[in-house]
Image 1 (cartoon, helix red, strand yellow):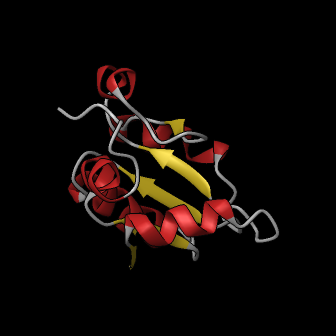
Image 2 (image 1 turned 120 degrees about the vertical axis):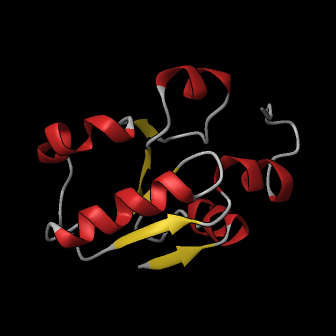
Image 3 (image 1 turned 45 degrees about the vertical axis):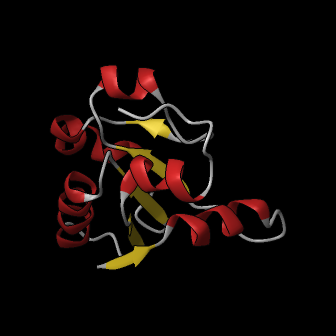
Length: 107
């Protein structure tokens, strides 16, 4: 499974000429309500198997959670289920707030 640092993701998102990955936030709804990376979609971890049909297996997907653990599990599951372009955001939104957006609420 590939890992991406928050600063790498920020650079990718800023490059409007590049293909944009789908940002899948796997945290619980209450967590997403506290803070989220702009442009991400919320699919809580426990709903991924039921909602996997909403995801394009050919599109690059960046999985996001609070610190990177749950998103790594989801990324691994997606890979085992035929997704080949899956990346885990190392450090999750916690590191995004520390490295990219210091105004983001932390919890």
